[in-house]
Amino acid sequence: MSSISPNNKRIARNTMMLYIRQIVVLLVSLYTIRIVLNALGVEDYGIYAVIGGIVTFFSFLSNTMTSATQRFFSFALGQDDFERLKKTFTVNLVIYGAIAVIALALLETAGLWFVNEQLNVPPERLASARWVYHFAVLTFITTIFATPFMAIVIAHEDMQIYAYMSIGEAAIKLGVAFLLVYLPHDKLELYGVLIFAASVITSAAYITVCIRKYKECQFRQFHWDKTLFREIAGFTGWTMFGQISLVARKQGVTILLNQMFNPVVVAAKAVADSAAWQVNAFATNFNVSLYPPIVKSYAADEKKEMFLLIFRGSKVTFFLLWVFALPLLLEMETILQIWLKDPPPEAVLFTRLALVEALILSASQPIVTAIRAPGKIKAYELSLGSINIAIFVVSWFVLMMGAAAYSIFVVAIVASIIKCFVRLSIARTLIGFSIKPFLNQVVFPASVVVLLSAASSYVIHLSLPERFIFTCISILASVIIVCISMFFIGINQPERAKVRAIIINKIKRITY
Image 1: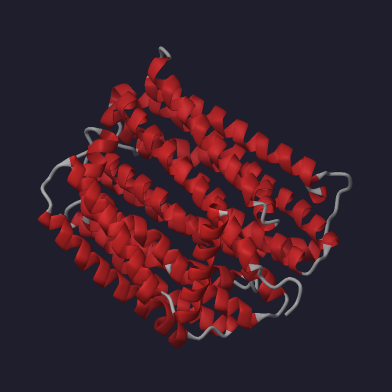
Image 2: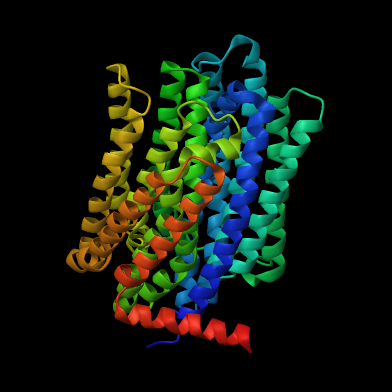
């Protein structure tokens, strides 16, 4: 096996670092959302969700584009080609600069017109909504410039830096929430300004760290390669198409709710999206640590090692999400009341459905990484982009027919199942990935774990009185049941042996 073969200890260490990071970020972020919701009020929070969301969804696009950029950094590192790495960094700076200029022009023309003319905002709050929009645009531009630097940190597998940066960003946003409570100004306008300031600080930190730590980021010489530019631009362009379709679908559906219902329903969706995103981040973080080894394995033509990473990574990704999702699904009403005090009326149902969608998609996340490894993603992005557009169209149709607001989540859940099969089919064609072993080694054991743990936990949930202490007992019991099910059913014998070895080793270190 070559020297670039994935190092299991490094992957485990990076995963643990990102897991700890996400726990801290989750706790801080959930508390931040609670403070912001109480400070703004449900109506203004709903307005921010739809106004700021028009650009916030571009920030999501920026984060996702990090993976596109990272693919080329990881590929160059996998081939141990420093010259290609320097050229890759330069080309990416040019591409993201162009993206920022185009986005600024579109958002301050067509986007601003949409805010002024189309959104359902109370007339007395329209001036504040415009203010928030302008600063949300500036926030997005700052995140665009930080994207290549974030990607280079992940490609180098310096997850400690990535974790510290994320925790720092969460802490700054918590500070923003407290300032929002105490500073005397229109809360909605103030929130837009403070979030922009937080983005500037975070982006500047990423840029500074990368310039000091990595030689390829130090701008000593302009490295250019037209062929590489066309390759990266094509890959980035198709990735942008796919992610724009995803984000447009998400924000488009939010706008549909804004048009057909009221800001309170939009606020409920915002709460659901936030909760699902925070929980899903535990699974996503594992894939952050898995992304560079998969791409490097492909670059070294070690497909057997890559497929092994996909099988194990898919199971772990799903289980990392399920261990948090099951207690939330069971105790959602109590948890939202503790978290938000007075959550929007439909937030409980919306959040449960959003978690189901995230669960369905989670197991195929490593497959997406493998699909991106060869750099040929046109068919994938066209297929997934078409499904995202179809979700918006179908959601619009069912709402026009008088369906309840929650129907948009049902449409998304059905589409997520279709997405998983499309991903498997494309992986088979593009990299020779075998579907049957995936179903046997990932889907079947995961399904059994879900059925057994959900049934057992639900029985315990029903048998306990509705009091806080019993809610805690129910949550703890469901986590224990999931862990036991995963150990004895979810993983195979060699994997159980490795887990035992790790546990014994940790106990020995603690003991001695």
